Image (cartoon, rainbow, N blue to C red; front, side):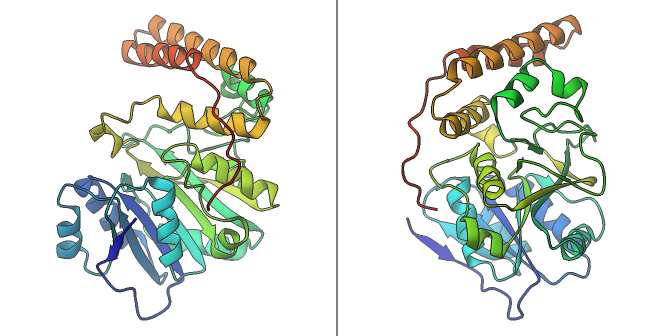
Length: 324
């Protein structure tokens, strides 16, 4: 794998390093970087973009409109995890922020406020916040709990949705965590704050995950190491979700299921695999029926496709060795 650094890092050591992995999403990336400029506040920061061999005008746009950004241009698409690790390795700050290119910060001084919260709570090793769609609707998947069998069953039976503070499912539900913050099992890779010392301690994202599931595995690893993984429910950012994947015919919308399934398989070593598959398939089938009854055909078809995909899942061999 070869890469080229196109812009030099800042001369003065930053307090926060923002790391964005891009792939064929120049327009979205420009919106994201503009929002970082506007919402950084007084925090001294650097921005690192790791581009996974985009075929559009991403590199030209960065050189023209964002000359202050350090760009690492890969000669191939290395995947989200490996590219994120490249960015973290190049970062100079003690606090790192992984940010997807299809996110937009909307709260003025958002990054400065988040840094202040991390300063006030040194016990927190990594943190995330509430993600919403552009229309303001809450986005399920901004964080979650360790995918144990009870969590899978709570998700499948809709218990975590009906009583989110009582039942812990695979994903957080809106209102499940009370302010100022709560402990979670993992954070969405679209927005994750993590201390450099935590990365040095537990390692970066597992590069054997090309896309999806790597953030769940990372959160589990942090929790096992005694790191407090926190979620701030009162700070929101916009996440288009799938903004870069819509252009990739080889990346079906079911790929996130494959990632969760792999994490579950590696976590439990094959135990409960049949229950996992049948429970998830049942849960998606129930959701498909409920969406159909409410005349939401698109969502009903998506849930039906998820159910069928889960039933065709096969176990993946657990990773015996990881190169983090």
